[in-house]
Length: 76
Image 1 (cartoon, rainbow, N blue to C red):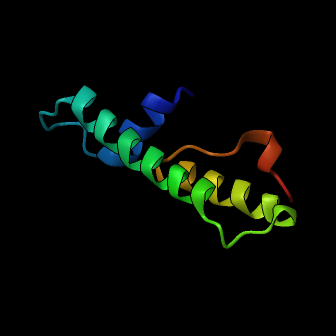
Image 2 (image 1 turned 135 degrees about the vertical axis):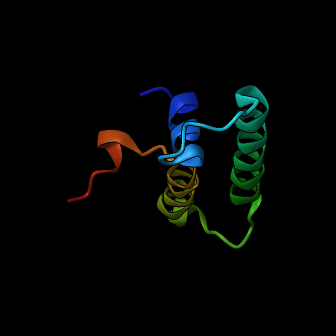
């Protein structure tokens, strides 16, 4: 599923009966996600060996949007 659709589905939940400006909502959510990703990348408290944890935090940001990490994030 496309990220755009995943974000809308997460925000709308089961209620598809209200009027929304989908583009503005997705743009706002994407901006928030990019802001969070930038903060993770700029976090100097991580050592280089902790790169895995940076990536994990970025994947969690996508999960908050309703997306997932795909098969590359399936540790089960």
